[in-house]
Image 1 (cartoon, rainbow, N blue to C red):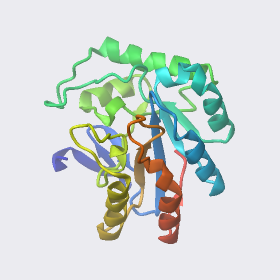
Image 2 (tube, rainbow, N blue to C red; image 1 turned 90 degrees about the vertical axis):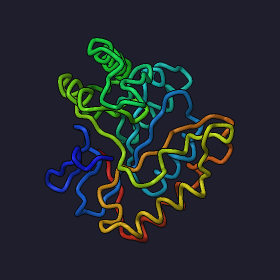
Image 3 (cartoon, one colour; image 1 turned 60 degrees about the horizontal axis):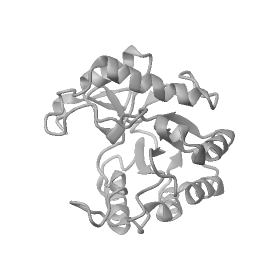
Image 4 (cartoon, one colour; image 1 turned 90 degrees about the horizontal axis):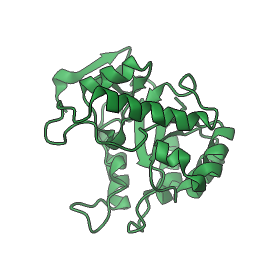
Length: 238
């Protein structure tokens, strides 16, 4: 991550126009979960959060919201007071992997993708006022995407870098793979070695993963929460 693009405002950290860390002076962590195709983690995740009275932050695609199999899950999350947000309608790739600053969708395509996402959310009585934060698909974006997001009256947000928590989607047959134990270790090691620990962290994992991945990281959520609580962290809702 290029330091020239990183800025801080009132101890928050921004990168390419997106908020990537909350107040780094406070021992707060926001647990962020994204969902598109899969929701196999819903029972474990929601039961764990409820056990500790923690409000999570869930960002789902329009495809997730419109999937009838997930309707009751969404209703239960909303009833429990969790944050429910947008993650694009069709999980499009907005900008090039090889050249990040090159957008590969038009502004019109981007706006339609986001608006369609919020249209599905409205069916669950979730408005832009309820969910002002937009988390880009693939957690990949650039300054132009941030500007277009702002133009829709929304604010771009992304995970805090430094751990491999967002790699819990990887599968053994893929080009690379991270086991849940290795992911857990990166989180613990980062917290212990970083000057500000995980203060203000936006810790992103997935609400469900491909069936090929039988080593589900959400099975370690309770262990992780207990570890971080012992370190003095509180868990916050956006």
